[in-house]
Picture 1 (cartoon, rainbow, N blue to C red):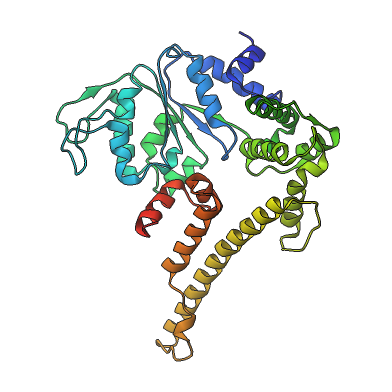
Picture 2: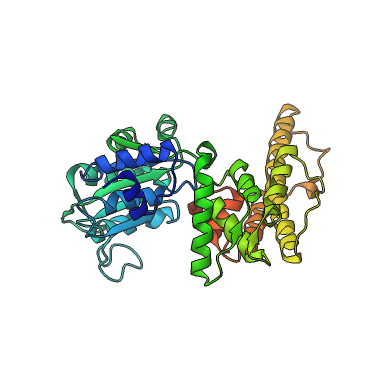
Length: 370
């Protein structure tokens, strides 16, 4: 199988040297059972490469199980991975298999690996090395044959240095490391990806295939794409959904132009673009969420600075008006509520807006009873 045939079979879009080199490496390592670590920014398509590795391996006829370690609350992640026995803890009303048993004979893809707690990392290392584990509440060892593919958008070496990730697990996983470069570093792939997403959206929604102008493709090619392929795909879908013709031109992506200008100037200056009322409302809400987050950080810094001044003045706080002090939890709860309202309950989108992990969002929602 050639590299081009491999890309077509597993949906890897791109003609850049970086992508073709990655595919070449995948074709070499996929047939073995060696663990693979995929590293890259959020939105670069790490799961697509994980599926390609599994699909080209000798385990392809068995299951690929995907686990987002950042989306599962810390308290139940271990149970989700390794399963539990009936009565092992409150709520364990029956025996339950974990993801390792479900993936037996196949591949387990651990996304957002850096979010995994240290205690769970210990058990993961044991499974990788000995191919065995114990369910929570069980006294017997369960044997499994699972290939591990892990992914993260964090520098694990820095996580190790900060004592947030186990060094032995890191070295066990990094035998084969695939780095997926961000979209802005392989701009020759953007046009091909854009055309692919246009076709995909039209087919999925039973729409005529829109035509995109060369000027619009130039705009997309030169855009910074901090959200990478995920942001590009969402932008394409938004442009088609809001477009009233079958032609996508520069004006169809005016929201991208606006965000670029605001980022460049780093201030909220009025910029005229042609927008529908729905677009204007969405931008207003999004800007409000950003302002809430920014205000929260500034308030935290201000409170910290004030606390230092109070200590230096022997706790003389007569100049402070207590009514001006807003508790952190009140501001935090309000920011989370606004993000959830804006995303219509989509926790992944809300976490992205707040710039926190989904696991942290779940914990905060439980803490504030949201």
